Image (cartoon, one colour):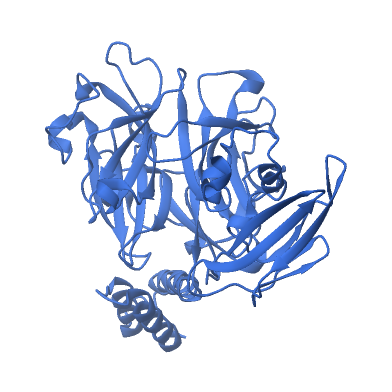
Length: 475
């Protein structure tokens, strides 16, 4: 039965450990489901049997040379049939249907993160050629918005997570918390933010202590007997759940939470759904209970093995057992987690804030986290294979970035250039305002006005044009 199903159903859960087809899929990290640029070394033997490979059909994207399968270009318009690959192992022949993944059409990477020295959100950029290893800060590591305005509960933002929305916009979620003010590691809510240009953001703060009044579904099940006792809502993230609401889809927002209600003695992972406008949340429901505290979940869909991969921190353990773990599951939001690995790069040192991103047009991933158990702290960016395993001990992101818990999003050339121009213009305006000869000039006023302009449509390109023109005028 399993061998007649689509490849995604066989990815991990085929019960036959001797199945030739599944063993070969594992050997190539399931990349036949989503081929990207580069070379796949095909196995030459299996159980003493010599393997012979043959590519059936013609494709402009791939070629076969002996035991090497090459993908030299990618389609622009979605996943594409790549033909059939045959493997002859003695008297057994196994057939694989190949799928070519689409070109990502991205230029670089945006690292959106909490400041390492304050409760603010910062940006840093890296190009595709840097492969997630080199980033430079924007705005000289100044905040991208005012947390006193955006975080209405406590006026501090932590653990920034950014992603693309479904309506040509961008979404961000943060932990609404100010340890600087409260001198406490307790907090009570999160911030839902939205932008159409990556620069100007609107925010709605959800204070979980308000209970039914805080959520969009007051009649649904209550997980907490008393919402006023919610005292920890940490590290929210967002993922699009295509199956939600009978296939219409929805924004799944997940986070860890703790309360002082009886029996609530460890952090569990909960989820809510946000509306399309990203302004409301449904009541929290249980996503995963480890039996001990876990926090800082990060979930990615992997089109190679067709599984959801979740990284998380075990908070309720000590010594070498602490740190970042990974599990996989097959469906949102309550699929059964299957533990896969424990990242032991840092030994018994304290680590948190995992994040992962696939390299542009490659089946290689980067897995990042912060080691806060050393002084100075280390924010490490490691490399992983197509199934987010075999994680190396990667280099530091660079101390010029002032890194902390955050997330990564790929960006187009236009988005990259816009953020660069915005940073340059903002810093130039600051310099001019500090110059007594220029502070009240019309050029300063015009440049400041340009930074405050917003557009309803085609915002990225229109702002890029405006900032470029303004920079030319003030230079």
